[in-house]
Amino acid sequence: MKKKVFDYPVVRQDDVVEDYHGTAVADPYRWLEDPQAAETQAFVEAQNALTREYLDEIPQREWYAQRLTKMWDYPKYSVPHQRGGRYYLSKMEGLQNQPIWYRQQTLEDEPQLVLDPNTLSEDGTVAITNMTFNRDGSLLAYGLSKSGSDWQTVRIRDMESGEDYEEQIEWCKFTVLAWKGDNSGFYYSRFPEEGSVPAEEATFHNKLYWHQLGTPQSEDVLIYERPDAPELGFSPVMSDDDRYLVVDVWLGAVAKNQLYYRPLEDENADFVRLIDTADAMFNFVGNDGDIFYVHTDWQAPRGRVVAIDLNHPERENWRDVIPESADVISFINIVNDKFAIAYMHNAYHQLKLFELDGTFIKEVELPTIGSILEMSGKRPHSELFLSFHSFLYPVTILRYDFTADELTIYKQPAVDFDPEQYVTEQVFYPSKDGTQVSMFLTYKKGLVREGNTPTLLYGYGGFSISLTPAFHLTRLPWLEMGGIYAYANLRGGNEYGDEWHTAGMRENKQNVFDDFAAAAEWLIAND
Image (cartoon, rainbow, N blue to C red; front, top):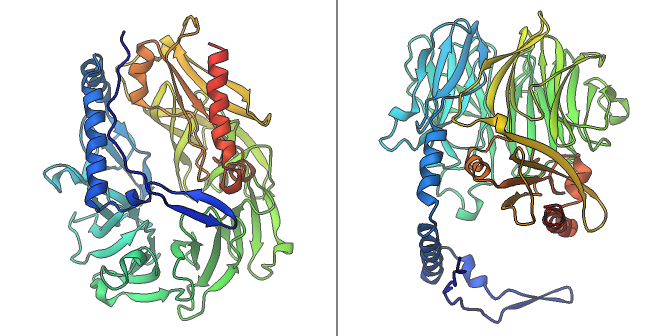
C-alpha cells in the first residue's frame, strides 16, 4: 500500500521569545491563542479539511460506522437510587440521545416515567446533569444543560403531581444541592449573573445560597461567600441527622480542599472552619452526632478514614478509623451502618466492607477485574447498588444484599459482541527511570504476534484521573479486526495515590511522557 503524502497547510511562525528567570522560551504560535481571530479560524478550517479528506478515504470507515451503530443499540442503565421507599433509575434505549428517568415501587415492578429529557428539545441536546432528590423522594431538583454546556438551569419537580414549580435557578455550574430535612428548600452554590463581572471572572465569585421552595431565585438568601478569595467554590452537603450543613471549599481542579460546617439549630451562627488549610483532600463521609467521619489523604497518600470530634477538632486528636493501606481508597458510602469502600488495587477496584468502628468484615468478590463507576445506598438501607464495567464487560448494575450477604446482577445489557473470544492481561513495564508502570492489554484469544500487530496505545497521566478497566465500545471493532488495545496507567493519575499523582505533575511532568514512550517501546519489544 502506497504511503499517503499530506499537503499540510503552511502555518506562520512568529519570532516571540520570553525570558523566564534566565531561560529563553520560544512561543512562535502564540497568535493561535485567540480563538476568535480570523487567522486562527482559517487555521482550524484548513486543519479540519485535511483531516476530513484523510478520514473519508479510509476503506474500512463505512464498515466501522455500521458496526458501531449496531453495537451501540443496546439499553444502558444507571444505578437505582432509593428514596422514600421507591427506586429511581435511568434507562437509555439503544440509540436515544438522552437517558430517561423512571421510578419503581419494587425492583421487579414495571417502571413509571418520571422525566424524559428527549422531549425538551428537537435535536435531543438538552441533558439532565444533576438529579438530587430530597430524603423522602417527594421532591426532585434537576439541572438541565444545553448542547453539552457546563452551565445548567435547575428546576424543581413535585414527584406526586409530576408538575414543576415555577421557579428556576440560574447561573449554576458544577453545582451540588443539599435539601433540608424538612423539605422547605435546599442549599446550593452559583456564579454571578452574566455581565455583572468581567468575562474572565465568570467562574469566580462563587457563593452559597439558600432557596426557599416556592419562591423566586431573586429572594434566595446569601449564606456564605469569600470576597477575599473569589477563586474558591462551595459545595454543600447535609449530615444524615440533619444537624449540620457541611461545606466543601474547593479551588478549581485542585485535589485539595477545606471543610466548613454550621449547626442548623442556629442558622445565624458563623461557619466553623473545621479544616482551614487546603493541604490535602478532605471528604465528609457521615457523622455520629459530634463525630465526623472524613476521608482524607493527609499524611496518607493512599487515603484513610479519620474520626474528628467537633469538640476537640485539632489534628492531633484525629483518630484513625480505617488506616491507610497499600491500596488507594477511591470512594466510600455508609450503607447499612457500615463503610462500603471501593479500593484501587493495582489500577482496578476491590469492594470491602467495614464496621463503623473500623473492624474489617469482608471483601465482596466482583465479577472480574474491573472498575466501580458509582455506588448507591444510604445508611438505613440494607442494599448497595454498584455500576461496574471492564474492557470486555459492559456497564452492569450489581446489587449487594447485606442481609443475605449476596452480590447479584440487577441489570446487564446484551451487546452485539462476544467477549469470550477475547482476553485482558495486566503487565508491568519499566519506565525511563526504572519505575514499574501498569498496563492492560486486550486482544483476541490465540492472537499470534509477529512484530507487526496493529496496536492502539492509550494513556492520560494527569489531574489525578485514574485509568481503570473500562468498557469502551469504540474499541471493540478494533479488537474484532485483530488489533491490540493497550491501556497504560501513567504517572499523574491516582492509580497509586497522591504520590503517583504528584510524580506526574508540574516539574515532574516529563515522567508522564517517559512512561508513555516506555509503554510503546515495551509493546514493540514484546510483539
